[in-house]
Image (cartoon, rainbow, N blue to C red):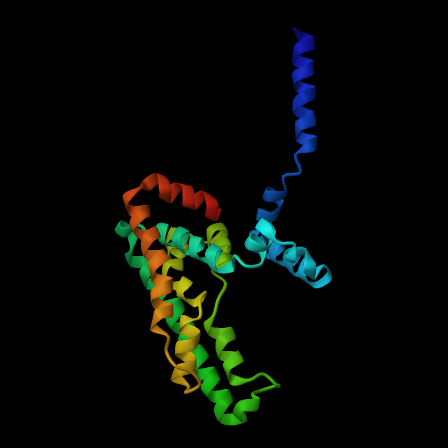
Length: 214
């Protein structure tokens, strides 16, 4: 009997030694689930640029699939919106999105008025606008899941609009540099709406998406 216990103990110790727990280590770093894969992808694209061009599933997933992955991400974000708790997430999302949008317009117009098309420090006005009005929804989800609460995470339902080109182009239009693409707004809202409806009709789907976000 003691031999069996010893053997089981050895097997459990061997499993612990084999388990690198990479996911757990990545979670310990703020935004690590986004930053670490991003850095690895940049290094591969810099030093081995042809690695993504071998065709098949590799190219489809890592090179051509950005829009598709973003669509799935927006569905997951939409599922986080609980219709019973829509007040505070909606307020936070609108506040954050509005501030970023107004700040982008103000900075863009100021740089354009003072420095012209050449921009400030060699950075053109439209680049300032794109940088300020846009955001990384994946990183926001990662950080809000670790350090925020459910309402912070739910704010991504509105803040996700910054992930696409809509508000950036609206800001450019406000400064007279581009037109307003209403189809971009629809393209962002459709997957969010799908996730929102599905998540409120199916609690299991919402829980599954919450697991994916964490």
